[in-house]
Length: 407
Length: 107
Ligand code: FES
Image (cartoon, rainbow over all chains, first blue to last red; front, side, top):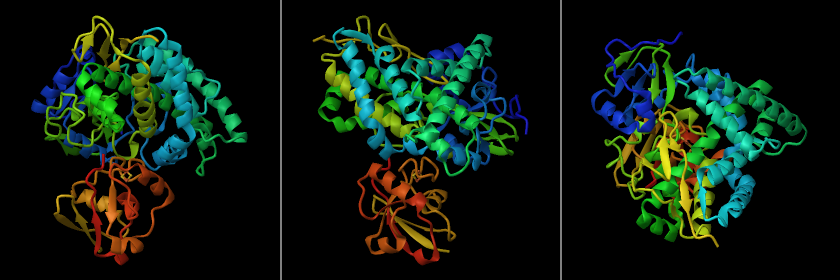
């Protein structure tokens, strides 16, 4: 079924400027939820589905809202991979790759190394009294953790972060910039080499990593499949935990009263994590393609229609979350959509929860005394000298400049 | 077809009938039973479909499988000896009349 690149008959057409969306997509999403919960947006080339209930509904129907989107940017960047597959093929790859990311393995196999790396990074900056917590701490931390969990022993944290950035730019290259494609291609070549090498080693000495787990899986997995899926994991595995870390730290530094309460009750870091992921979802949307005609949000979509599930919008839906635009760790617990739902539920969820809420935040706030946003920071949640929120396909802080009393 | 009774945290209950072989989670979700979130759609990776099997029937429902057992350590509401992930519990005629308690929190 070839994808339909035009609006479904009867679907409202809404023009949105991609630059505006990158700056702050939330006002546009609020308007869409109110007036056109399923709208064709020409600049995106997809129908945007923006209400919580509709998104959950679509996620629960993978046989209709297929992940096999043709011409998907992700497919072009990394090749066939489990994110753009449906079951049973998705299941085969997912069960081969997943074991090292399950919560008990995270606790028993990886947590101690995660913590050591976090301490090392903090040792490096502690005496400086100022840093960009994204570039100097969060990104190298999650990249090193990812190399470890994947089993890429020869890749440095910097390699991983660079590769991730190059591929993420490809995945959101809705403007079709040729330079972006070129950089992404270079990164994917490098990953293929690193994976082939790691796979060789893991074949002889299993090490509990994702690559090792895929090599030794019960169902057969080809090297190319391992390579492509490692690319996908590197793509998402850096910016998602990094961005939750950054946005959550930012939200707390702007709210000293809330921060004090969290520091007094470390169990609440878990709530900070879930609320941050809801408030500014690191992944804002992902595409689906209809396998058959289906009516949703009052529009009958023909087979082949392309739909973007805008989870960033669902997470701000007032019908589900009161005062949805506010960051509030005390709000009634409601499942947010940041990890996606159904068979594609985020494989890195347990790794990210642990490295960010059990390690990164508690260590940063306990070791860097008197931590505050750098001069020029305002209480605004979207823009200041200390950091800037950017993106709509993926969203986070591009930097988080802070100061503290250096010992 | 087996019938299951979901006892909700607010004290009300919901009776659901589903074919043998259906996962308890599926029966709950298709019938809109509140409190069974099931984010991962039944793949034992999210721990948001947690239920407590009524103590009297816990034995006939059986113990959790290995993956499930691990995930049960990470549920939002406390784990108890009767805890199961409803996506890993298959309904059968032998379980007709099963009573399960839906915990306060899943996330
Ligand atoms: S539905 Fe996710 S663990 Fe049962």
